[in-house]
Image (cartoon, rainbow over the protein chains, first blue to last red):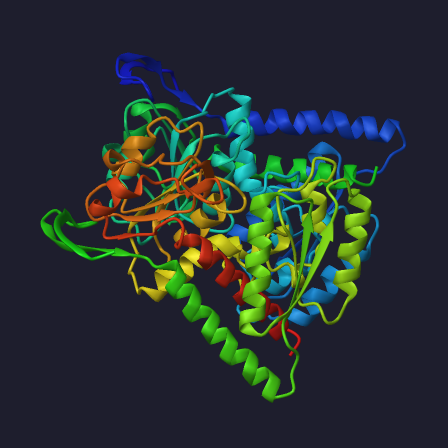
Amino acid sequence: MAKKIFIAAAPMQAAPYLCAMQILDGLLVSKATKEDLKIKVAQLNIEGKKTPHLAAILIGSNGASETYVGAKVKACSEIGYKSTLIRMEAEVSEHKLLEVIEDLNADLDIDGILVQLPLPKQISEENVINAIHPSKDVDGFHPVNVGKMVQGLDTFVPATPYGIMLMLEHYKINIKGMHAVVVGRSNIVGRPMSILLSNNTTPGNCTVTITHSHTHNIKKLCASADIIVAALGKPNFITADMVKEGAIVIDVGITRVADSSKKSGFALKGDVDFEAVAPKCSYITPVPGGVGPMTIAALMKNTFLACQQKN
Amino acid sequence: MAKKIFIAAAPMQAAPYLCAMQILDGLLVSKATKEDLKIKVAQLNIEGKKTPHLAAILIGSNGASETYVGAKVKACSEIGYKSTLIRMEAEVSEHKLLEVIEDLNADLDIDGILVQLPLPKQISEENVINAIHPSKDVDGFHPVNVGKMVQGLDTFVPATPYGIMLMLEHYKINIKGMHAVVVGRSNIVGRPMSILLSNNTTPGNCTVTITHSHTHNIKKLCASADIIVAALGKPNFITADMVKEGAIVIDVGITRVADSSKKSGFALKGDVDFEAVAPKCSYITPVPGGVGPMTIAALMKNTFLACQQKN
């Protein structure tokens, strides 16, 4: 998309200023992150050290889950990691799944373990997350890793929020002191995002408001935000009237919407009405090609980190 | 303090309404909580079950720490818990302290362990917190317990935020959908408070803004809040112009300020300019006699919970 010059009110400034809207290109940053990891893995090989190895467990045959796991395995291959894909049928028992996780925990060659969510109804997500050894929990969902993130300690940060932080870092966007509104409070995105943005880090140090289904004045809150992180999974929820001029908009939503014009029969829609919102923004992520690829890049970084703890 | 009738704008309503300011009496609620625990302990004794046992470690002789630990030990005695106070000199090594914690972890009679903060410089707070077994971490500072709190799972919630939630529950204040502004992002109060208020619980389900030293428009943010939680440790920081009519104000600050008129030589000051702010509030906590006693009551509840896991 071509850059567009327009007048916008700067965050934290009263006077209007010239502002160029910039796309936060997740594909580009993801590629750069993976290239960097590729060089590091090559170096590990030269030094005769261990190659990072990710194990992914996929249960059943949900279309979106297939796509996500496929992309993760492909990223491993591109970078030079080893990967193991374990498929289990949709009817698998929790007990059987926990046994497989236990084996992976004990396997010295496996650095990272991920179980693709969502899980079938007979399996407790909590039990599965708790079963993965924290040192192999590259998704960063284990309570001890969540706790460390809250306390600002080194840990595996959940891949989607981590990917967003990597993107903000890549574009050198100074967000300190900005007011961020996070829409959605999921354990996977909204909650960790609200913590990372408000932690005493760079990027970070934002004033952060976390909103959810019980929030009354969501439109007004968003309209006052310097940064909006939309992570609720409702296509086109964030409309132009909810975005102030010059805001940074991060779109985490990725919903499959029926679209007969597409070969696949569906289109991917974000939580942001991109066409209407983009011209008002200083920075915005597209869907697809924004947060999605960064999630995979962040997972790859976590897997490298998990391996490094052993090397 | 006598109740006062005045006109105030209700949270979430445009029209003014009659509002009576009410003191949230931490002493009263704390006493009720402790009475309840006392009955439960008596019942445990009748059933021949284990009596809750709290071990407190106090390092050095800081006046405030002495007071806090003294109050905790006294509360144990009032309720009928066993308590063990371990004093260590200010110069104690981290190694020695960790050894003592290890012994307490292994001691089957000890249910809860707390190490009074702050610690001397030669000791890492992180190492000490991580050394306490999560099942005995009644302060709720261990990463795994913090993570569980974030994920809304049963755990030990840090005593001060837990005490505040108990107080809101006691007074049956319906805070769902209110906008809470938390001033301060400490691991002990501000951060967990922001999480608890925004979790999908009752009380809870607030829209929450967390603020800190890099927040630009703190006065304006507070002035728009339905609930203010002041936890920054700056006496009289929250002034009347920062509080809207009808707001709920929770004062976590408790700073010792020199006062020659007092026998002790100091007075305890909250973060809120109580005299000026109180008349505008629907509810407010005093200092002392608000959050402080509730912190101890919450610790007692956590200790009971820790014991219950064994009984």
